[in-house]
Length: 245
Image (cartoon, rainbow, N blue to C red; front, side, top):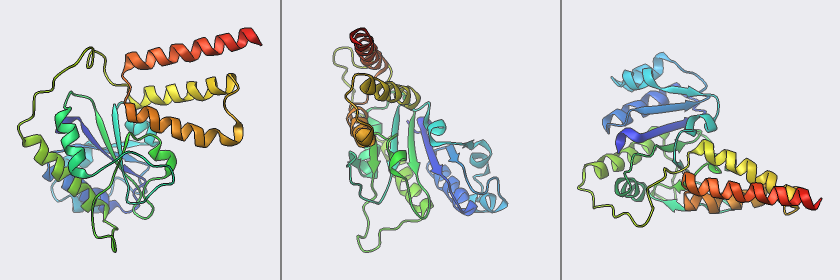
């Protein structure tokens, strides 16, 4: 379970925080770190704060965009302390760990942590299936990023060591892998285009509609076969619209 989990940091400002996150990860046997446009990396300060977790820093993947960082992942979870106008399905670190332990089928999982001062933006959460919120003092809810990663990684480590219930497969569930983040982004681009082609999408409301549609499909967690069916429906709808025109 732990080998399939990627910790993703977005636009980290302080290199010491990257080192502290690497240390927190290694404490809990999680080794895959991805960095999206870090301000300073590599850094001697990051290495110093890693306190022996240099191997995680050495293997860290530096990406130019969040889409690149999560492209190969089938489940994407964004950590955030802020409430949003459009709600995301939420979970605590313990609920997250339990979900991953019960459904440990080998799919790659990304857990995203945002900027130190402002967290994740809405368009970044659009890539996420769930929002992860760490319960803490409501009068002082700001966690250092390394502390937040430590809490989440601890719950994952504990859950991975527990005996797991038998996962009963019903029907064809599990025959096709879950769609990756890159496949879902391609689908959303196709969906946006198709809704415009059939006259459903109005330019001034497209952003809000697409965000809500993302919530629906991310909540379902489509597999590749289901995605192919939906894209076939979109293509047929577009073809029929062109014939009518």
